Length: 161
Length: 256
Image (tube, rainbow over all chains, first blue to last red; front, side, top):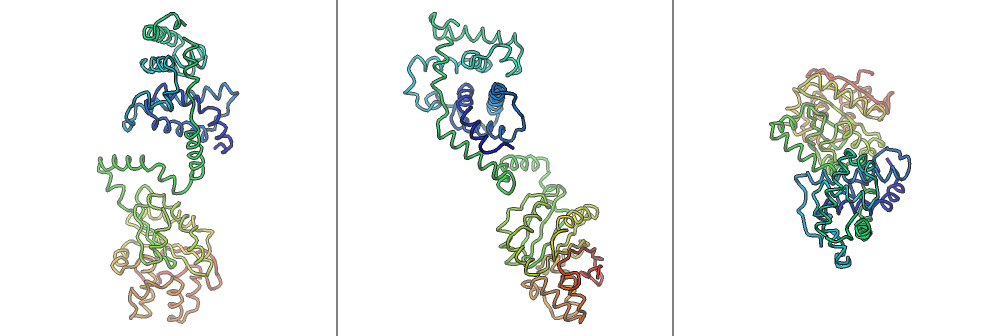
């Protein structure tokens, strides 16, 4: 079991990453809190020793993605709500960013992780494959289709990869 | 697209309240990784498991006690233990027993854990430190199972001073319950009744095991009898015995 100090360090360091993955998957804040507790408790109870920071970050991403998927499968999952309730201060987000976020969140679920990990976390397709347990070619296919959907939805050359 | 997505996700942060609540949750979870809080943490899973059990007719199977652990010091308690070694009922036989039961969260615990909680209770420790005697009697219809429970109970209390473990037949259990006494106290009551036929169950209900044992010792004129309470040569020691069932000599310590 890890110490309170380690737990607090992990919360400080990975809370934003976990929050962003929750946004990608979940539709309400109550579920996000459940995921935070699940993921960080798993970290505290885990005896995994990480080779480096990248390894640790990838562990958090994988555990969070899996926790979100498990929650979505749950019969007792809370209701879904609008984007306004997902993010804390929606009015503070500029219109074009809101549109981008909505477009990403409207993607079929299988595309969302890949888009987030490729565009935001800047993982390569082979790295994404390892984190999500998918074949490299599958990741490329998912990326290609997701890019097309986003381009159609958002329009303009600005959204070329 | 990359720049826009990065810019958008950069605006999303975990707020401080969420981080604080997570830290609080982790601190609580770390503090309650043992003890009764764990029960509340797993309560939903436990409830679901119970519902499923009920659906398959397992309710009766789960809640049917196969062994009874009777604990007497002055608080008198009986723990009903099911075939899965869980405490499925706690019966209190006097006021002190009720107080003790209320202060503990032992329902659905493994009986060894429950026993450890009872032994660690402040009031019980005070009684034991005050040279009182704890009697633990294990009984049940399934002889093999009861023997196993007895062995584990005996092992649990091995290092505890002034504690006596007994293994007894289940036939007298009904008589004990009719008299409104826990099994351990009922056995001591029967022993006392042989020497003092006027004694009634309600007379011994409020007596400590030490007082009953002392009374037996006085009436029998056999000072050695008090040794079973740890006041003789083996004072403070740990004792164990198999009751012969219904015959004379219940509660006598073999080592005397």
